[in-house]
Amino acid sequence: MVAASRRAGSTGAIKALAGKFASLMGGASAANQSVVMGVRGADKSSSGSDYVESEAEIPFAEGKARIASGDYSAAVARLAEARDSADIDQLPEILFTLGYAQSLLGDARGAMESLADLKPQGASWASDYYLLEAKLLVDAFAYDKAIALLQGDGAALARDSNRATGAWFLLGMALRGKGDTAAAREQLAKVVAAESGSELGKAAAALISAQ
Image (cartoon, rainbow, N blue to C red; front, side, top):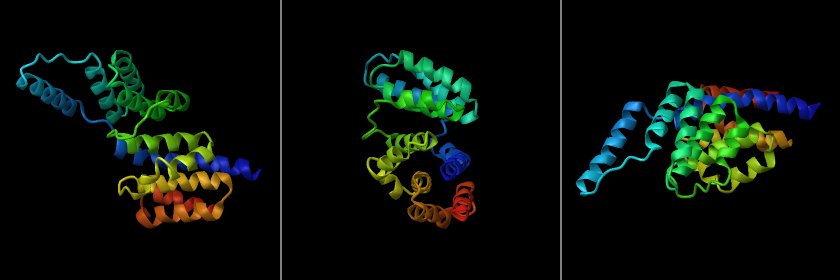
């Protein structure tokens, strides 16, 4: 009964991360994406070579724009198109973005499949990848794996001013799920201290009170 209650609390509290993820990983606007593609074209032209736009460029940009507008179903559809036409250099970032969109749509299994075998080290999206993977693991009650990730490859998240509270919250959730209430309280208290007025801070405070 205690374990079931703890899992039910985890499922509800994890929703507080939605705003955090939206602010960190929301797609750029379609206009911004057009500017990016235009700059790439200008760079190619200035170098004297013909610029051939990848078939994945437009659906990738549109998929990110759909994420930003909250149309996650359309985002997944466009990003799947980008995945299917991407070259090998583009594919990892497209798969990560697709996994993010799938998670927002509630397709945790699809998201994990998209993230499977990705190696984000050194990529511009590495920090967001670790945060997303940790969230998916906590959602799936895979607490040991979430803890290992957040204390291993994703340990730098706790030193990232933009992502630290998300990492502390997820680690607290995972520790709470494991039954280590003292360690969970320590992590959740960091979230409350950093942003007590946010939805994430309020969720962390509620979890501390429920222990």
